[in-house]
Image 1 (cartoon, rainbow, N blue to C red):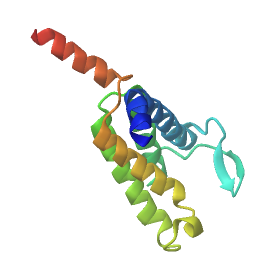
Image 2: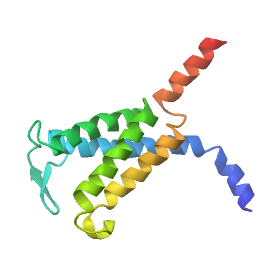
Image 3: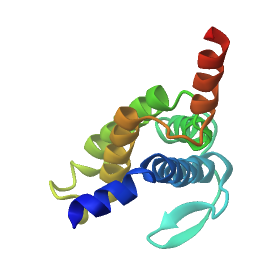
Image 4: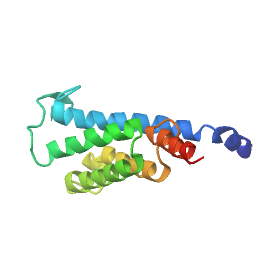
Length: 149
């Protein structure tokens, strides 16, 4: 029974990986856009209140984190240089967790860091698995293979 299910689902793994990458990249891009552009919701000024302005240019570390999230999120969404972008984003989220959340408490549910942990391990997955079939990386790879024949 499970081998039949595995066989049927195997052909979907690369397209589903692409969908995961696109959604994950868009969410990460929105985190950066919120910091840099105060878009689409404005900055969070209190728990559940999003009406503040964008982070002032050059503010350490939040403006720089927003730039990283915006640029890497776009690269990951379109699937360009996905493995290296995801590797850097994974490290970015690990630093965010240990710097901003971990000092408050060990447990992510208690310190508000579950999003950072999920992003970190999602990006680790993309680092290992790549972009999937629907990506600029896949198109570039097909172009190299065609050019060699």
